[in-house]
Length: 155
Image 1 (cartoon, rainbow, N blue to C red):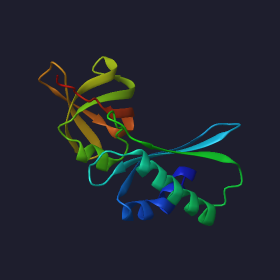
Image 2 (tube, helix red, strand yellow; image 1 turned 60 degrees about the vertical axis):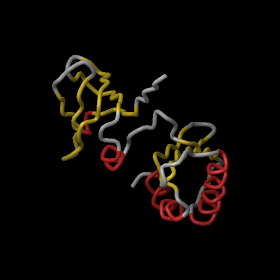
Image 3 (cartoon, one colour; image 1 turned 90 degrees about the vertical axis):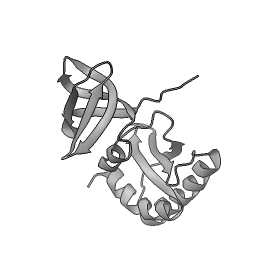
């Protein structure tokens, strides 16, 4: 289990009880460590500054009491934003029908960056209909470097 997975396991239940979901946890930096926790509200509402403050305080207490953090670090709690990353299988299931941008490890259909509509998720693979094309492409999660929502603004 990675360090981030250990942290997620410790904080997931308390955050769920408060109405928050964990989108992604990253621990970065060589000299100055940063622990970034990206959150989402379980009720579908927008994450506010007050939400980030509440989660930051809760996570700080849990980390101080249950984790042996020997190195100093900076804790950052943030909203996932409109271009929310899709990280876990449940993210792909939740956002079927949404516009997405997929960055792959290798070439897929002649490109490493694909934009389209997430049509389905099953068997650890997504089905995406590329923009301006009628055919769907199946992409295994193992081939995806990153994926995020591609918000469409209508004026």
